[in-house]
Image (cartoon, rainbow, N blue to C red):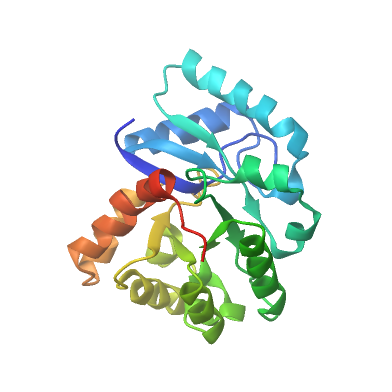
Length: 242
């Protein structure tokens, strides 16, 4: 399917702090379509769902999307916390991973507080088990220097990608986070933007974020790469093991 790709999106109803009902999920999907998105990697917090129920619940959601003629593809993923990694089997990680064989990757949540040691150990463990890592919203993480710490530099050197939130770019988390997001967005690569949508209060907003970034002086090629090209590239080409 053509159109944008969202790699961090809470669409499944009644699971975590995303939509509470199927109707709310369908409305969120409609908003994503209106925003130009055609593919969503559904990323519930894995600590909030029984993973052996995930495929059945996704099948139900996809059926409802088809029944309501909402033209969007939903893929199986998950937002993994650092403390989750050691409890997940290789088969569970494979179920949550995206990308082609030999270049599969997982979305690892950055810590909002504390230090970076547990996070770094989790990223190292995922790589040791054969997976690339995309770091979710590092610009929001004080523990990771809002994406500009030595810990982040080490992860980038190890092949990680960074995923920024549209709400950060729009200033919803304050000026420090917004400035950090713009600085990361100006990198030459390994940065993508996703909505991390949860509902009507945190909707998909890639188009609005692109406009905000342009007004802030971010160059068009960086915006295009991070919002239009990079997410789809991650699905197609993945992250080669370091």
